[in-house]
Image 1 (cartoon, one colour):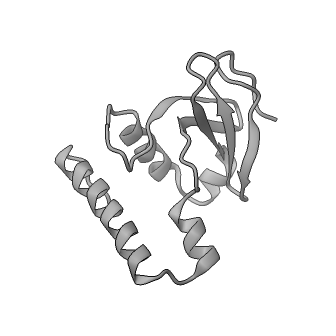
Image 2 (cartoon, one colour):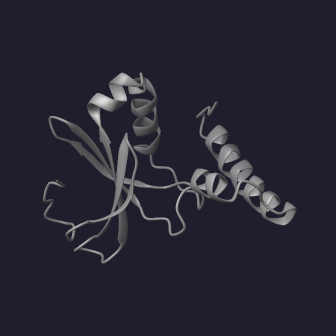
Image 3 (cartoon, helix red, strand yellow):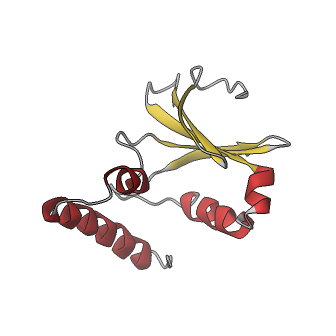
Length: 131
């Protein structure tokens, strides 16, 4: 069950996996579509992903401004879950498309490679290292 947050519409489930769920919500203040990434604390601990999740949050909390990076609007937690409220990016994650399609055309591969290189270059210019 998703907790109620006064600035968001009632979220609808967009994606579910064993470790996380992603909900689509709308900001009542700006009418902007937002993604709410929900991580189960127990699953994060079992997979030894605590450091990775905290690193992700610490990077997202910075005032980064790049078209290929999601903005973290705010985060919160319950006793069992972590919540990240992010920009909603229509089309989902690249990993989903790779799993579904297995092979991309050369043109599409170049397109994604350019976006990734641009985002990584920006992160490096902000003294953030991604490995």
